[in-house]
Image (tube, rainbow, N blue to C red; front, top):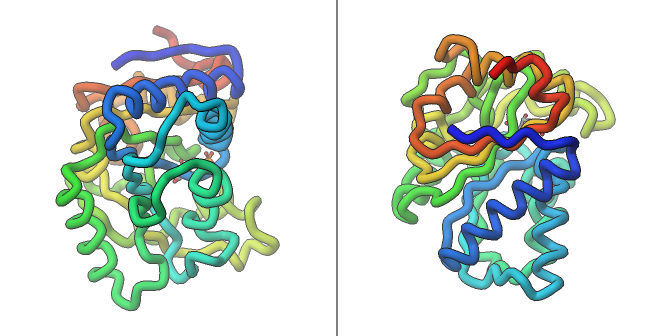
Length: 243
Ligand code: F6R
């Protein structure tokens, strides 16, 4: 595991965008596993600006996103599909048919998750998986206690996750209670993983992930068992880490 300690959110974003760019340049048809949330927004801004500057070409890139709320349609502004279009897909030359996110409105949860897992396997798995970390240590929407071997599945969101995500909604009761997510097993099959963390509110989770016991009660701790993980985190997020 490589840990890059950077000054702040801006530097984290630039470093993460550089890692993603290196992947795209080395393998133009890379399968990128991407994340949503506040953490990667700056990373996507850098990618868009480097694309506009002619440095990057997304024409062969394929994307498999980590997760999607259940019961929310793609054109809903709260959907992760909408988020990805707004922050990345609409601004680069990625082909829409090469962007994949679980179908939040699929009728049967089991059908949605099995189809998504199959798709990721058929594509050969992510070459690089980008991750954020929840305050409770979740990755994707794998909440504390979820099995390390799980594939794509439907989850009931933890109370703390609903609490954290309500900032994106007008009312707390509008935050979906369930989501589709790649499982930890799916994430761990990625060839490379890049974990991002910024801010003091991630410090406790990051300390647990990097220095605590490897336990399903802190899902991100499993990443220490992966052979190629890069952590890019700012000083505030790493403030409780000793090493
Ligand atoms: C998002 C995702 C989540 C977030 C995590 C951190 O696709 O899978 O695990 O990465 O909840 O969210 P932010 O970045 O908003 O703090």
